[in-house]
Image (cartoon, rainbow, N blue to C red; front, side, top):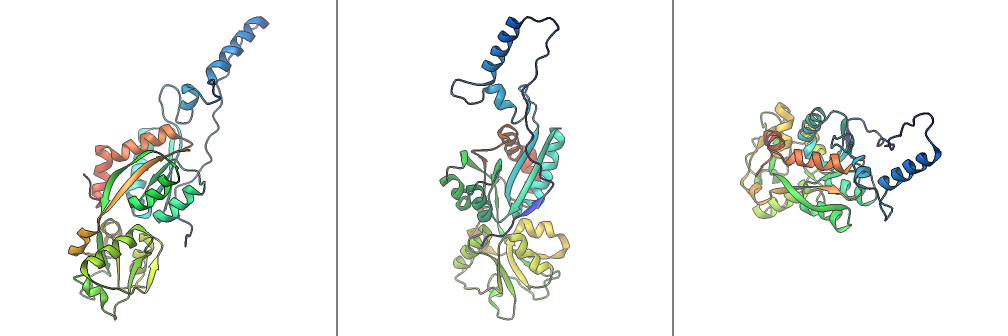
Length: 291
């Protein structure tokens, strides 16, 4: 059921970090060279064979704390616009870094992570899909909720079918699209429908929220249940209709550093930026519910 997730921005292989080279003055004695080599070896590795603090610093920058290198973020499709903005601002604030995104359905992204796909950060559209990663032992620490999101009905511009409620979507004359039930937006839609006591047979189930919205934008569907943030991002290409049952299906979005993050230091800094006042303003402007 998984298909390739949407990728944005170029992806680079992580940079190889080299230990600093010592310069040697002419005429240095062999004995002194041996002493210097031993000192270097001791400082570059610890007794258990793992990297020392200075060695670990190379993953995110220099020992001085400057960040560098690529941060690979797996993020829910509904975060596409806001995280792209946050990535660009993070790079500007930290020259020498590059944030690369893999956007898609949270379940597909979680499956990729547990299968060994290299990534630094996972931002999911639901605690349930984050749990796939934590249960597999692939998260470092406890995931933190950074925003919430709520459903909205997306219709064609001008709402030509006069849709005003969730019940209107059950009209057999309408072509309605839902996200797949395993995807967070699909699970939220099912919760909202159950809260309203309604059953809905869509013309298709889509693998992520962007695909569901695209069906409406291309006039292949009359309406779709998507997130408010996606209606906001689509501008005048669709029209949004609020419905009260959406309050019963608000999704928490957790974010986590991954256990085998190639660039853990810069990844932690990116997570901190997402949760900062500035990061929260960007997300709120996109339509997310922030605390």
